[in-house]
Image (cartoon, rainbow, N blue to C red; front, side, top):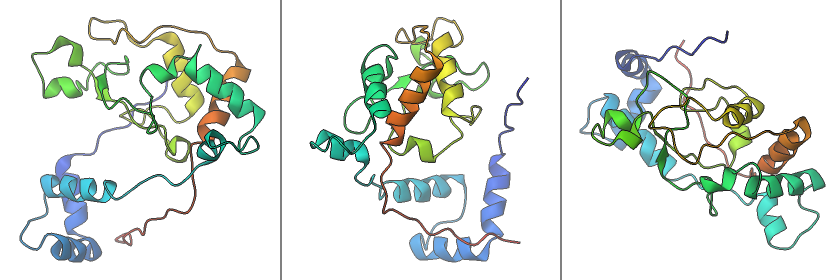
Length: 205
């Protein structure tokens, strides 16, 4: 049985940042009047994330008419994505997300959006649909990082997740072959562009 990652306590996150002089200096430069706590950490991360835009990917070149930009396997994966695999029902549009919250049956402990919106039964255990842009570059997956590979993610969707009243009606059990899973991964690989980078703060020893 695979172990579930242990969540890091807020106090530990705050102390790690406060103990790193490089982080402290950058915080003072960006937020001179703010103390370092979980709220300002979240504010800083959100500010950074808003600056990130995906680079042009092979998929974009293919959509623009370059038939050689992606492989035949990726093209089959795109058909599956829009059809049998049902991915498009939530991961749609140019950003490959509906920006909505869904319970996809992944957890029995973390209530997700339900911890904030307690009076909506459909938002219990619900998490926001992530974009699929650059998805192959950022494992592990799901809100908890419980699934390491995209094959594991697909097998979760195939089973339909935990059956409960809040589970999204969009979760429908399906069956994919090994080849179909590989074709879907080949398609998702085409959503990763190049030419973007970020500079990490040195790790405190």
